[in-house]
Amino acid sequence: MTESTNVVVEVNENRRNFLSGSVGAGIVGAGLAAGLLANNASAASSSSKKSDRMANYTADQLERVTQTLVAPPFVPKHDQVAQGKPKVVVVKLSVEEKEVVLENGAHAWVSAFNGSVPGPLIVCHQHDYIELTLSNPSTNMLSHNIDLHAATGALGGGELTLVGPGQEVTFRFKATKTGTFVYHCAPGGVMIPWHVAMGMAGAIMVLPRDGLSDGQGNAITYDRAYYVGEAEFYVPQDASGKFKRYDTVMGSMSDVLEAMKAQNPSHIVFNGSVGALTGKNSMTASVGESVLFIHSQANRDTRPHIIGGHGDYVWAAGSFADAPQKDLETWMVAGGSACAVVYHFRQPGLYAYVNHNLIEAIMKGAAAHIKVDGVWNDDLMTQVRNPTAIGS
Ligand SMILES: [Cu+2]
Image 1 (tube, rainbow, N blue to C red):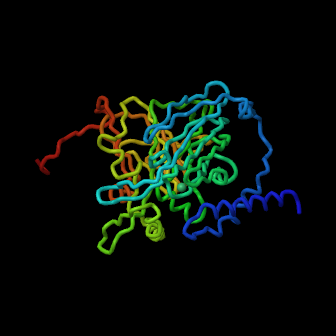
Image 2 (image 1 turned 180 degrees about the vertical axis):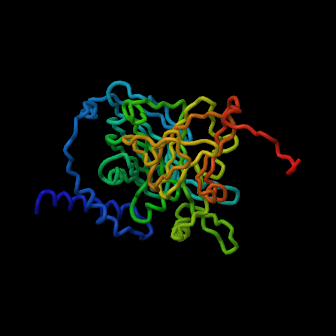
Image 3 (image 1 turned 90 degrees about the vertical axis):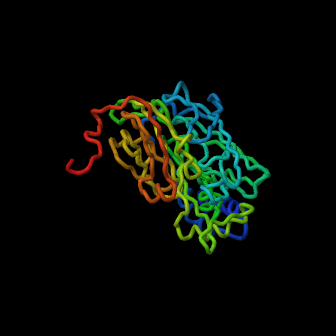
């Protein structure tokens, strides 16, 4: 038996414990381990290109900074261009299991990182380390963990972070890839889609150390940034079509799992409920400002669109190693990913920011508003003649 085979066996054992420790009610995702091990085993480093000296620090050589996370759509305070050496960015996520109102008459149990759906955006620069503490208060019923798509190895951290009620865990990873990435809970088996369908996802943005660019050497900056987390819910209905309500998160599980199988969400929402980003909670901007939008969907495909605007620079797949696409109308975001878009507002008014499957936007909830103040430009658009009777 070669040494590498031993490693695989060891990983397999860990994985099995990881699954059995996490899954309640006798539901186990038995097929999961084998499929994922192949990826784990091929961890050999590829021949490195020109080395970046900023990549060569180790965590113990670097300054530690605590990032204060904020509830979406707001984003934590951050530098667009990294200052000095990489840092160890310390963040804390605490899981809250609670019932929320998706819209009038529709309740759902969520598992929410820091109490919000989506969880807060984390921001760092390439070569920074993220040191993350995941806390699962004893008031919860379920085990949780975190898989960050920005991380490398061990199921994105999922293998190292599983905590039962009353436990917390700290792990650290190096942010080697730039871009916008989803993170989500993945405690094994059907717990994975269930927890994600309970809103247990968020995003992390890893900026290039020099900030964003158009791929031709020109910097792209933004005046403000918003994080829109899209999530779908599968609220069970009774025979009369009324949404059912449950006393506990565990009480909701089997009906919700059954409803999930049809892949026909009852609600598709931005930031946790229908209308969470409209009215007084609308996003705001001013004419002349460039706004960065980060948009995640941990489970389903989506297609953001700014009605009346565009995506000036769009990283639809989320990687800042790619040059952005320009001047798009709508962009496709694959389920399990996050995109970044910069738009420079040229005209005031109320913009609708939607998932441009308009059934999902208008009938299921995936719509937000951006209130933009400023002076109207008649050259860009004007009403040449008011509505009048035809032929008058
Ligand atoms: Cu969870």
